[in-house]
Length: 408
Image (cartoon, rainbow, N blue to C red):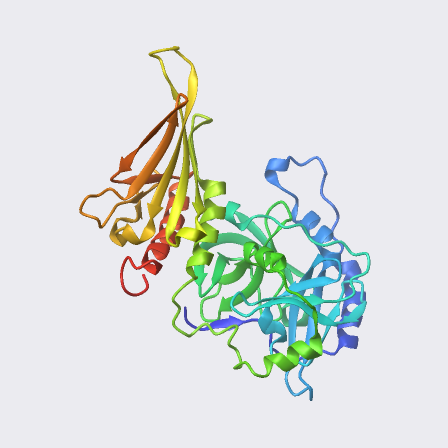
């Protein structure tokens, strides 16, 4: 990925100037609410998404010790007294402030959690009785779905843009959503919404010489950061002092060669993704379900839990049963070149072992447990696109387990 720009740094507007802009533009930003009778399937009107989100989205202003380097970014309320943004927005800064949409300004007092790899940080700020934004699920997004971005490009606070999901990418340890919703310097750290007004990403970067290509970190990375035990919250000054020992721009470097996500991150993503998309439906009926489970104690071994409804006409004609199977797969035995999606939305796995017996199967059929082996495993998904995304991830996991030398 060439010429990818982090979106925080630009000449800084003063806090008082920003506050005046907020107060003077509030009336202009009020958008009449659309009818509340819109069907849930069509989502919220864009004006509704904007009006509901506006109080929880902030402008972040930061400066170094001598105010020689200054930064401007965006952020949003994720919990009481907690604002999420990109790590690179405050990287190298000694102090930071947030400006709310009503003109109130609060100093950033501490850092709750920080991830350089994901380019995410959660700041401690007094948020009062403002309400946090609801989270959605980036794994439920599909290419072509509408999305909306809200942030402060070039200091123009609360600029609302729309676009569609273009694609999904992996960069370093991040799961990135590629969209056409325009963002610009100052938008870093703002929320990306789905059609229901839920946050599905954190706007992060753009490709400078390719208009229409913008990236957001998936909200799943922020969820995991919020769940990680962090111990004592550091004051912002203490956190800034610790950052001085770290090379500049380590968090947001896009030019270094990438080996992709770690094995643990890849498995975690596959678990989440398969629970949402590991399903096959025909004529409105479920014909197959499966999801992946990690087995940390067994290293590269994973479990595939599968269920197939079927009708046994030999004993009780027309009676519907479920066949449950547990497939135990050692990823180090998988041939990477065989990990591929087919034209039916399946992902296929085969073995490097001459015996071909790489998948141990335990099935429960009609109350009877059956054990055996399969030479080839098939994992079903709700679409060809889903199977392609999962195939890329599991192939990466296979390679990390020694299936082939070097990244794919």
